Image (tube, rainbow, N blue to C red; front, side):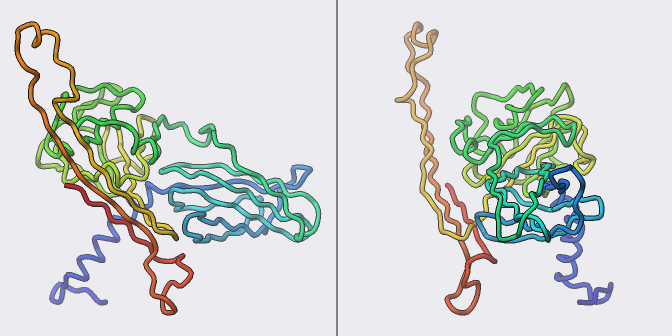
Length: 318
């Protein structure tokens, strides 16, 4: 498509917007890096490496350089399997590597002498120490996001769990808190200096003095991370904290569910002073229904038969 001022179409505008957003979208993705060595500690060049997403079976490949180093950029969140093979060495396979948003993960590999028909399998440790960068951050996994109770379904309360965070959030700020209830400070910085990113796109409404353009349903979030200090200049939009949210994605299998978030006066004990004054409990009733479904997009015998190329996820609540 050729773009010029006389024939500037909506398609050209869309392409330009996507190009401008590309650095932001990449910034929230993770990187896996490491060095391949032999039993003596010498580096091994030209090693074939394959990184496989366990949920979608999508593969990324690379080759170690002359220093034995390799790098997988732009890795999405999820569980992965890393395989390495070279002539004269046993095949190496490491399973259950957990990758989180905006993470730099080191996975060094030691190959054993042997034939490629032999395989050394290693399972990744569940707990890993962040040693590749000096950033201070707080990660809340998708499972934790689902189970944590937030007041009024306000996901900003998740950001208040970050390291060095103080807040003046109200007891109830309304559903999603689009125009209020986002008063949190990272290490003493101003509450208006924080930046919220959803799949790499900024959610701050710059003309509203601290409002959001949109906030996702809590059940649509796959991962939530607060960058508290010393984070990468890739996230240089604001001088306070950076809050990163990643939406769930479909996998090679269909998954879905229905839910109801419910609050009612009948569940609450009366306030001591209200009861002593002979007053009834303040009435408060809230019912929020929702559901979601995700999986592969495929046409039998026509497109995506192996269900490993195109995926969808849909979440709705009211």
